[in-house]
Amino acid sequence: MGSLRKSLHLGLDCRRPIGVLPLSLVERRLCVVDRLLLPLAFLLPSGVFPRLFAPPGGILGIGPQRPSRRCDRGPDTAETSFGNSAPRAAYLLPSLRADRRNPDRRKFLVTPKYGKDVESRFLERLKYIPSQTEVLSPSTLGRWLADKANSGAIRGYVCPVLFPLDALFLIGLGVLLGLASVSLGTRLEFLSHVPAWVWWVFPLLYMASDLAEDATIAAILMSPARLTEASFKNLSALTGIKLTTVALAIGQVGFLAALNGLLLLMPKPV
Image (tube, rainbow, N blue to C red):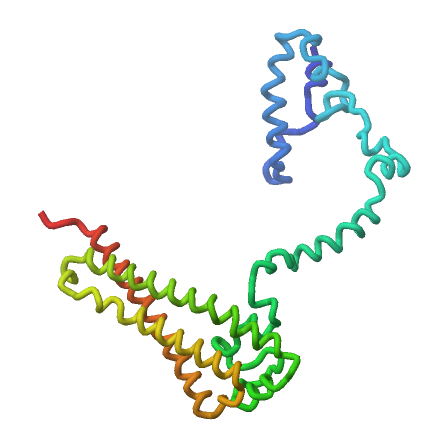
């Protein structure tokens, strides 16, 4: 019985003084298992759990432990089993790097086909030309238009980027903002007397300014002679009006949606 008790002991001193060294989480769990299994040694024969009653030095210190399979394998065996990883990694790395750029994701986009200048939509969004990295001005824009290397980008910017794609987008966004504003405004009782056309002011101004901006850009790109100081200032003004009106239209929808949300959360008077 004494040898059986020794064989069940996990080689851990559960009664270690607290001030010496704290028990790790694994040691505490093994101590709990040791104390739970120890009473079974007096009730069950050793043949019931042959692995538990094996000689010391095994798994968890209570049974014979055979060497690991990885330890049994020599270098030749490991290389035969897993194969040489260097050629395989060299084969996979180019495909992984190409997948990070993932050109297939961009093949459905239109603007990248005409260069980084058209992709950035610099006349509508930026204050510089990406290929020139200079401040956008009539002189830099005129130099960009005169470069024959940009002829394909100019044609692509006009069609299909501006017309019909951008025109369809601005019409869809403006109609969506107008319908959302009307729908949210009519749900509020204290705003029910407001005419529906009021909610269409900002969306319609946005669509008109954006469409005028696209027409001005197309006219300048197709006929560089129309690029003057006045036309460039008009283009900048139309861009500013477009950004302001679309922000106001989106803010209008957000404001009306917030009011409807507050009315839903507030309790109704009895």
